Length: 526
Image (cartoon, rainbow, N blue to C red; front, side, top):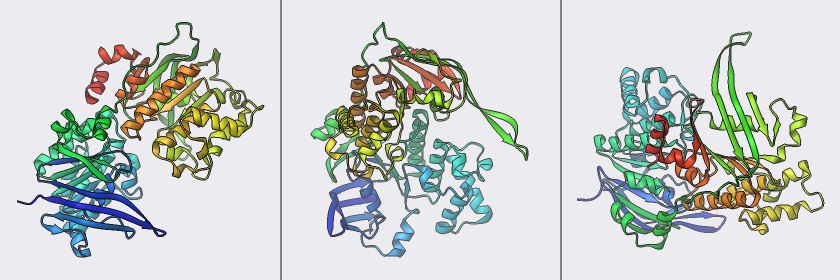
């Protein structure tokens, strides 16, 4: 009996300006009903290209060879009528970032209705019944009240659930999930994985799961195919691959997990930053006169202290107030309470007074591609702050940029290149170099590793530890990846809906959490 989805000797090349780039080379695997097959590898290994090839979604520049058959029907070279029938109907996709996959101008109801009308001809009452059934199935609470919501009005987890509902709308035989949990909090991630496992069982689907996270693979997959540079270098049952990996690349991936602990803090180290009773409430204005009718209570009462050479890990789900608290400490948003930086209470300082402190407080954001200007070269990005803050005016800015690049593991010969010419890990190094060139005392790291491959995560963690060791930096490290937090943090703060629910030494919180919410977070990350 043939497999539900069978890929044989698939090769994909892209032709541009006379140059041909091979993205996938001789890939073969099968997906059966009720089975989860994981395609694993780092960015650029060909995972997503392979998945998109299954229903010819790669565009005209792609040269596809080999065979992809679904339920005995050949997909490569198939006519438009067959592809239209199969896409979104028999084979459905869930993509990594639901905010860019959902139409921001249409309500959830309209987007689900469109799919049902197109593939099943369902409209009116029948469509509405099916939509509510789907939303309830994927765990959207009060489904009827959510029908008129737009994507930006939903949380990340809710948006991903809507994407899953759209993918399931036409009862597909094969569900292809492309990094569906990468951007989600650990508790939401656990819920989505559990949901997909349940749906696979109840709907009797085949699931092709694409990810770079081997921890997820261990939990969800029956079989694993490890991809590197367009080829499957190792494949087999999940338990076998994890217990006895044969290929050096598989071994490298399995070993790529942030580990160890940060260096001990000098007992004589000075306090870098302290807050007391920090409160950040955003007023809700309504009516013609914009009267204040309530508040969004982002942070309620945060009291922390971080010394030079010390890392405070800040964890919690999206919307818990992690980033808001860090931005308030940097005086980028208004707050109440005390903020003491290097012995000075800066909460009431004017913009002019703060300017001389700005070089001492820097931030590295989650998405380096979004935080780096695509129109500026690497040198311009890293060196921009030098002209504003007059750091070491006796030396040429280009020399200082080159020094910062070497320090963060970048080749100074690449300083005239633009962000799109670098990998994700290199872009994050540029973002760190941009902060470090000013020699700050406090560095806010807002999810700096969540968008990176596991091997690159390990490199960035090591880099940050080295920089802290060399310069005695104080870090505020915001993350939902608790393995990274454990490897980086001396102390840890756990936030939930604006409240600090637990605060103490990181080791104590990991080994003996007192709060139920902390226990839930730790359990979800296992």
